[in-house]
Length: 88
Image (tube, rainbow, N blue to C red; front, side, top):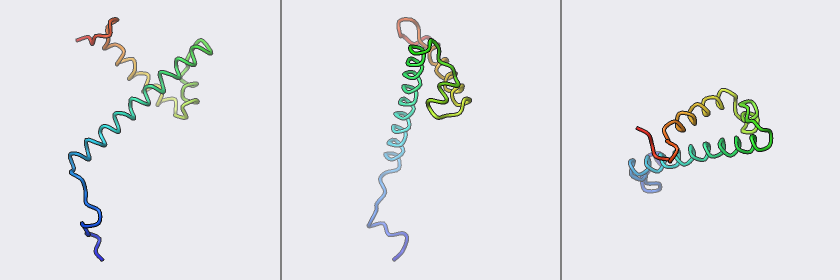
C-alpha cells in the first residue's frame, strides 16, 4: 500500500477549496466582530462603560487583542457617514 493512493480520497479543485476556506474565515471574522459589539453594548447597558479589561476578561482574550480589535472597529466606523453610505 502506497501513501499516494489517489483512488480513495480525491482532492477537490484547489480554487474551489481555497474559496471555501476564504468564505469560512470571512464568516468567522464577522462573528467575532458581532461578539465584540454585542458585549460592548451589554457592558454599557449594565455598567455605563465598556472597559478593555472587562472585554478581554469576558471574551477570554488578552487586553492587547481587544485594543487591536477596537482600533479596527473605529477605523471601520469612520468609513461610514451618518446615513450609512460609505465615505470616499
